[in-house]
Image (cartoon, rainbow, N blue to C red; front, side, top):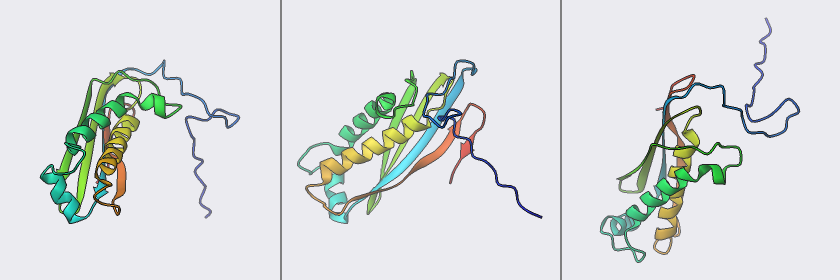
Length: 161
């Protein structure tokens, strides 16, 4: 028996293969929420300075939190085919480990399209802000594992471990 190949359909491409914004006008608004996370790896000495708020640029986590929230609200300005959304909630949280900061962003709204891109953007910009504010102390930092943890609402719910 031969296996049939599944054809992938990309919603942002029209029949001619050209990029286009998806028409969501016929979708029923539902409550939608997405959670994304990512990590910024750093040297233990940098983590100690971050925890003690002794880095030269000030309160790194507060600045990264605001940057992440702001970025979620600006996602459609950054990613060409994303719809502008009226977010009802954006939360950015940090967990400090010995060698990394785990960033988790939650975005929520009642609308006709998902908020995964907003959650991913919030995590990414919060991570970039952490990197920027700590780079003078640690040239070896890296950003890693940025992904969607879960999404609820719309056609399907998704949960990744």
